[in-house]
Amino acid sequence: MERRVYMDYAATTYVKQEVMEEMMPYFTEKYGNPSSVHSFGREARKAVDLARERTAKALNASTDEIYFTGGGSESDNWAIKGAALANKQKGNHIITSSIEHHAVLYTCQYLEKMGFEVTYLPVDQYGLVNPEDVKKAITDKTILISIMFANNEIGTIQPVKEIGRIAREHGVYFHTDAVQAVGHVPIDVKDMNIDLLSLSAHKFYGPKGVGALYVRKGVRIHPYLHGGAQERNRRAGTENLPGIVGLGKAIELAYENLEESNSKLAAMRDRLIAGIMEKIDHVRLNGHPVKRLPGNANLSFEFIEGEALLLSLDMKGIAASSGSACTSGSLDPSHVLLAIGLTHEIAHGSLRLTLGDDNTDEDVDYVLEVLPGIVERLRNMSPLFAQHKGEKYYV
Ligand SMILES: *Cc1c(COP(=O)(O)O)cnc(C)c1O
Image 1: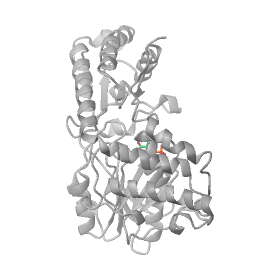
Image 2 (image 1 turned 120 degrees about the vertical axis):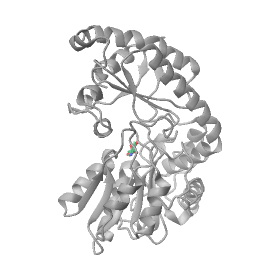
Image 3 (image 1 turned 180 degrees about the vertical axis):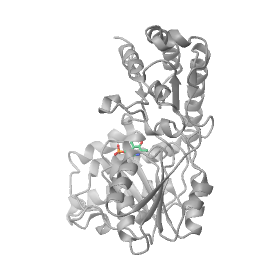
């Protein structure tokens, strides 16, 4: 069979064998409802408790600060809407950034329609939020600051601890969408002054459709799903038992070998980026050169369309992602790439390659072997390239 290389780990990961093995019994013989008082129920409850302990430990939180959810999007929605509604007596102002995931951006836009006011902070050319801008945006009406930990497109890691300190000093809640960061960078919610944190298992080798929200003790937040008394009356619905078990195992595994796995990933990422820059002209790296996720490479290729690049790579068995959203029915390029100052044209020529645990040096070699030819072929079909050959046109 033809070679297949998966470099789209920021979209989702496979489920690790050890995680899968731990989940399996909870589909079949250990299927109790954690709310039941009989032995089946108690067995299930024990498993949820263990997952909660593992999650709390990974974040330096306590177990009663962890709430399991249906994934990253739910956690983001809950954190922002829940905090907004519970604190609207105090004020109606929310601060976020212009490069958030849509689960945060669209939630904020929805709240604007409900009468809340939202400040969308700009970022610099690397995608960094300036903590001074956060400070300046705070008013006596500000109730929540929501800034993502690490960006899903360009990999930039924000100065979270600094932003958390400012929020704490002003008595404003600080939420961070850490869906790309959990399991990939060290996180300490206490040291980093985080009040609310979203995470999702399928971004760190756990199953899809399960996540968690960390809610610091004492933080005022309304429930998002109403019904049964699960999750200490804050998130109704019978627990996704196998999913929660998988999340717990995956988060524990992720932090066991973090340094080793990150240095291997970063070395592959750097060789990939350096190889592309060396073999191909008219390329720029998006995101911060060092403050970035170890597996993230995001590059813009002048004179071509990211979508065409993706399709050509796919024909060679390489799975990647682009910076334009044509596939989702919109012709607008990514809001993240526009926010870091890229023109529409160059943003359209962007490619995201995100590496993970199963990638090898041979995978990197294969991409470096295949990509230059694809770029050359696409550029030869581009009238703009013929016109501007040899000069820096967009960048
Ligand atoms: C994937 C992702 C989400 C959404 O998480 P789901 O579990 O897929 O709902 C939210 N924020 C960021 C930064 C993400 O990368």
